[in-house]
Length: 161
Image (cartoon, rainbow, N blue to C red; front, side, top):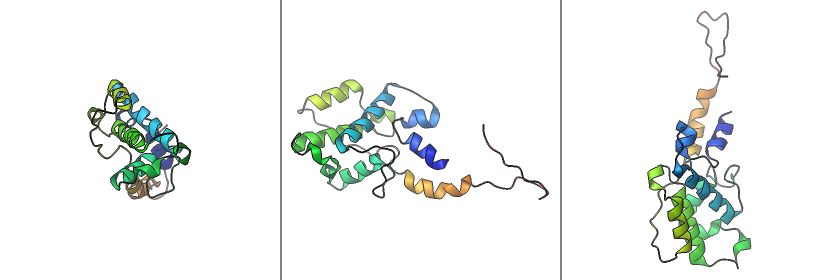
């Protein structure tokens, strides 16, 4: 169940919506950023477990930080896009998947960043849901059923509906 929850929240849902039920215009920006990374890499965000990263966002962030962002691109894009263009797209995608909604650009700004190569892009911060692997390992023992009986005669399991 925990793995299913992690896959759900680390998919296309923004952190504020997945964790608190809050939706804003920046929620769509987050989803667009995930979609852009998936398009550039030809890999799904959830189910991307080829590395130590939990998902594609974590993998992209790791590559970005180690100056290997071009390793993210699908080889089919080799002759389709220039190096500066792909780096720009990855930068924009990482800006879109920032954990804090206020740190994400608006969709109008995203379109402008993608179409105007003269706009200087800010450096992204660590994306949302890119660090959950360590939390997953530390939180799993909490999900085990525990004895809820006071007298050790009966065992009741508390479950949500």
